[in-house]
Image (cartoon, rainbow, N blue to C red):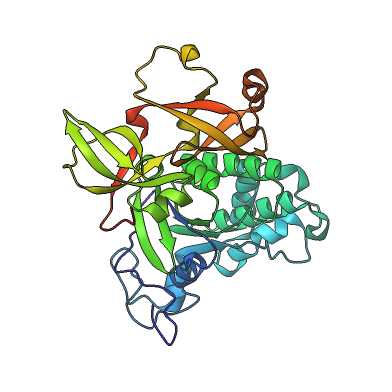
Length: 351
């Protein structure tokens, strides 16, 4: 999609039948623009949107195959039941067929008990359930969802996500889902497409994207806080030693000596010890003496930043912080396995 200001640059993106494809990326990545193009609400200035191989469907034919759920529920001033029935009233179903289908979807989305309630008095979570039921009720070939739970509180969002995942699984409904939230992507998605600045950086199964990001940008967005430039100093039987500054880190890998790389290590894969003799026997090859430089509360965890010659970040539970007596300035050992590291070849790195 091009113009004076290019918003999207996608050579190709497919949504497979019966899958949930999540468009994941920060604000301004082009996710919602792509979803609007898929919904037929905007037309690309170049390229095309094809449905089951056909690109010449009329607007009416296309929109009958697609339903959309937006961030705002956009409900009518009417009852829950009548709101859900709205789309079906334009599709020629009898009143009996309409309300049989409406009742079935209200039951699946756990809102049968509020069917006669006026939309204006619904909570945010209830209103979005009605919006979901209205979209599912049309039984289209594709459902598009644009950050549908961004306006609800965290507990309600998790309930909605769990119920939506159950409905999508039960119905094998094809869905394209937009979010900037990693947890939503992991809960909902079969595949994830990670976008930045209108470009597609990586697409694949959820766990592949999570465990094997292809670029530093994708790694950082997926929660890899330790992304460290280095050079392969030694290679021996599937284990490589990587030098970053004066620090040596060992990783599983087969890269040749001299290769520039990024060391990607998730903060939850680092274990901290306060004395070398306390380190339990394990297969962890990496034991770095560090000094704690900062500690920040993140919900039930503490984000511990350390300096070992390289900057490292670990996530530690509150009980562990208390048990170890961790504090800024204290020396600790950061211990992690060679297999916990994901190496990214770097075309160039400022080492």
